Image (cartoon, rainbow, N blue to C red; front, side, top):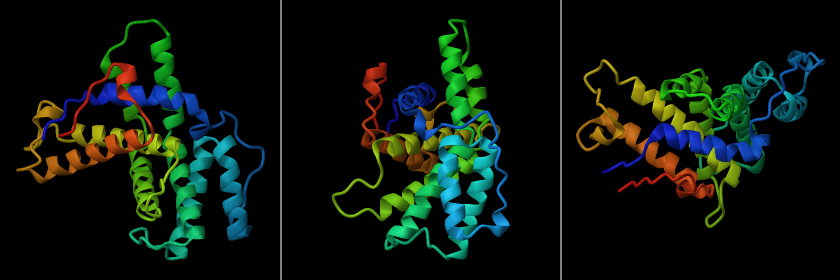
Length: 236
């Protein structure tokens, strides 16, 4: 299996693609004046408030709302491995996915990455790496899981996600892959590059390769054309 892909550059290219659909990542630098009292809210009110926060909430507010919505998922005993979820259950899963993305800080990372490129100043790959490494990858991993649930529950022949959601899922998964690859440093599984991963003989490598393939498939499903950015990658 060959992976001719510069993962970091691919992430950055997807970030630029996502910059044209900022509603996915929009967060406010200003805290809402309204201080929610989740303890007095009904489940419906929590859901409605969380949906509103997707357009106006700060990262901290989105994190708090995310915790409330995931608590609802647990309270309602929604099986994320099921392929027979109801429409209401899927709407809750979708909301959790979008909140997890917002709470991860990826909106700020998009802004910082674009600012770094637009500054005209010289920068190293490590500068961009630091931007993405600041993200809450736990939330991104959760989001990937929610997107997988949505995909598994899609009707045959229908797209499980919107183009923006597919691209968002791809970016989230790629950042998680980057983090997992970095974690190999100093271990017996360490390799010099993604091309050196040996999924046929190493279970840790196999997991990274599987996640990478999924990310690239999601990017394709979202209509992301890597060649537009001068990127050539293959997964064979």
